[in-house]
Length: 471
Image (cartoon, rainbow, N blue to C red):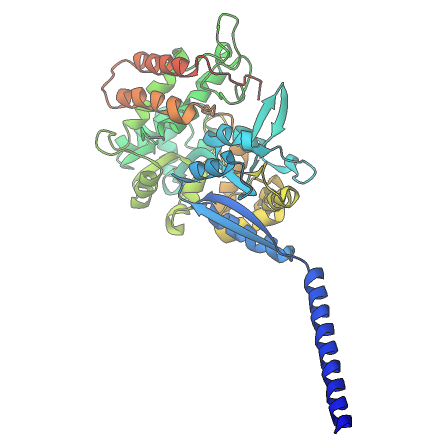
């Protein structure tokens, strides 16, 4: 009996030892196995599809990393980001901004480490408009553009490729019916007039005249042509001073006694641009009845009867294929464009800054930029990706023509509105209001409208410390 008890005790001891050993081995395994690192990216609805795809691919290539993409509505995302960042929270690793919100986010992000991101591969016009700042004359990259957004000319191929119409237009106007060969806004206006008056199209080249935002995009696209050719206004610059863009002087003249450049649009060049804007509006729905914005542009194009549009390439590409395939793209007259993009930056409070830099580098890598183009229609900011797409003979010819126009306009995307901190709150409404009143006839004199806007801009910027280093 005692021997049996002894054996039982011995067996129990052995079991306990085995269990303890097993628990110890498991504990050692748990302690040694890689821990999952969560990288949190905050963005707005619309761009999140690209970042969701990037997150999925990045996780696949980085075992042990989880990328969480938090999405807010466009109207709320900046406020949500700033609330977290101003609190010094490490909740977000990667934050999103656009040019108009860039200066609000810059104090809370760290400069991009060029050893991670190949900045030389990016279309610089996209990157410079919102992604950089100047500190004591030295440029620092604060965010990385992840797509190309560029405003250019879209035109109806069924009309423009017609040999008979081409000959009639050339004979009547003296201009070629090829937007790639246009050198001034006079040709855009002439085409609008020709197509409408000959009843070949219901509308000419439609432009965004929405007073809530669109006017601040359309006017600079037109005004740059006149600004650049006036050396007094441009000061020999092609893109103006950093943050101020081409609606201000390209320098601070000696006669100007403010720490910011003077507005440039209250000038003869500005009046010519505004008069051109209004004449183009005559060949689209009256703004007193229908305000044309990017959504309405897509609707009117889809309904047919539109000769062309001054539009964002991305909005044209997002139309149904049976519609978009009939719209070709070309740079704005003279070979330029207006930029706009979405940027990613690393929060200064992130605990995973190096990993966040890696993620941003992945998003703008040529390989992922190509993938996002083919799967989502996202227009690359990587020059190498664009070159690869252009060489893909299996793509429809019209898509390769799009990319050619986007590349030219993107490389020469000089026409820019301001993006200083006061822009969204003051400058946009102070400009759009008087201009819309002129477009709708409430103000008869273009000079009056522009002078009213310029005075409001100076008042908004007085006493505010601004960066005037050249960009």
